[in-house]
Image (cartoon, rainbow, N blue to C red; front, side, top):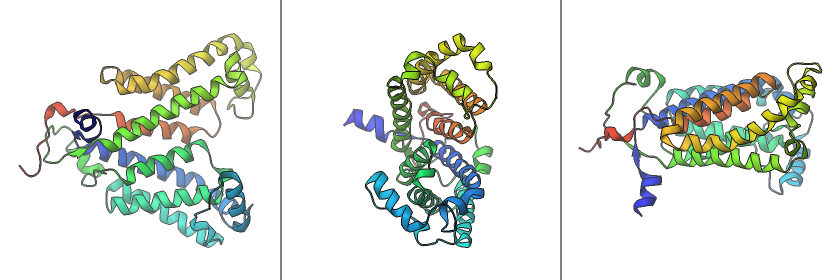
Length: 294
């Protein structure tokens, strides 16, 4: 029980949750703004797929039942209102007002999008949904908004505390994402042969057109394997306090590179970088937070 409590229930500074909540809210804001121009095409009945066909497609794809606001609010006007509501809710969530309610609103709208248009979802949609679900049942540091967090950033002791289980779950999610990715890549012939990055840069996914990757093929082969090693190492570096800063810099560098070299991958990179907020600890527990009852 002591080991269990130390891992899951150890008291930490609630400002750490506030950092994670604000970062996640701003990530959701970016995501909803990114989807806004495509809302009619993928979510309304005036777009590519009627809601009745989307329900059937979701069931065939996942075996589950589609649970989506967009199954009931199907016009262009209604979809637009929902998106505006989601954008406003994400801003309120970032501020900390009605945090649990606004988080649920954002989570359910995101889930509705996935269930209504599963063919349009991306890798970061699943990560966003998982992170939102974890935070729904976690402390949110709702007493801290960006303004008072900035003003009291250097304050070492506060009269509040929160169990760390929510941040630990996000940290484990980061482990799963990276290591599952490596396992899947090892089963791919292009990654196994060291050719994946070259082919990626030559494809329509590459940002810079031309045959230049062919000339750099030998170097890109080595970067191919180095990427796999980095993806295995990042979670371990982040987990260990003494190597955490190194892990942060390597991870941020990796995802900035992906965003620069790949088309439409900026939100994926931003999603992974935001997940690192669960590891950031500007106020380590050595400062011994005091209970509010004392």
